[in-house]
Image 1 (cartoon, rainbow, N blue to C red):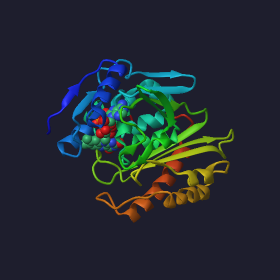
Image 2: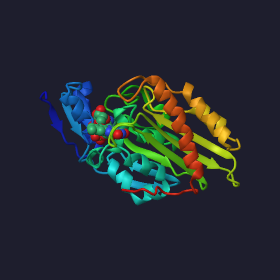
Image 3: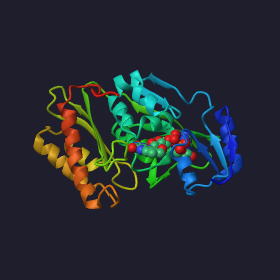
Image 4: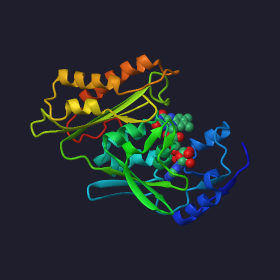
Length: 296
Ligand SMILES: Cc1cc2nc3c(=O)[nH]c(=O)nc-3n(C[C@H](O)[C@H](O)[C@H](O)COP(=O)(O)OP(=O)(O)OC[C@H]3O[C@@H](n4cnc5c(N)ncnc54)[C@H](O)[C@@H]3O)c2cc1C
């Protein structure tokens, strides 16, 4: 690996200063699971790594005003095992527990995962379905944006040089909310998905009609996506098997997969339709607010 400077700031202000000193030649590093791999492969050659690990206050999970906040340095494993997340956001628990292996999840952080911008990651599908927001901060100030506005292209986000993702904000789903999550991976259990889909539904009092629907998909295009046409079919409608089928079919024209070792583009399109339908069925088969059964 090439030689580089290494900084360990103790505060966000020190981190901004270190990032500014090296400009575009500096890269923040959190868990290092993605960045160090890229450096080993020679695909990233930063002159300075600015570690976020010693910055106080970026590792908290809290709840207030109907929102759960996860600091950027919360690890995937902690997000997966946290009781507050498990009770109020079981869809998120499910998504994080499907990432890679325990070893990776112990190091990888929620902020690093999102900032990496890899369209094949699992948590963004759930976070999009949950309507999550990200807080981005720099020496110039902070902004909070919906996650669906965060991604630009393959491995590209709206993060500017010198800007850090500091917090993830996830609204708590209302009473009566249901969810489904499927990571379809036909190879090994620790592989990236061929298609990952998450759905969040809010039903009316009778449980027969859909009040609100959000569907997040990953592995099926240059960025994680919301399947908005499928959502529109569901919203306000009576949830029959035919309607679920029709909604899932809309996904066919919303995804833009490419062929790779996990399947042809055509196959992935078919799987996106199939697993969206199954995730919707999973949500409807579930008692409201039910936490995942199969915890590790
Ligand atoms: C073997 C392997 C298998 C994997 N399998 C899966 C899988 O099945 N599903 C899945 O979803 N993911 C998978 N991953 C990806 C894994 O989730 C990411 O590597 C991880 O989330 C990155 O988090 P990190 O904290 O290690 O980020 P880092 O490697 O530290 O950083 C990643 C990028 O984000 C930037 N960055 C880090 N933190 C911040 C911040 N707070 N603000 C701004 N920029 C920041 C860095 O500069 C870098 O560009 C796998 C990774 C590996 C190595």
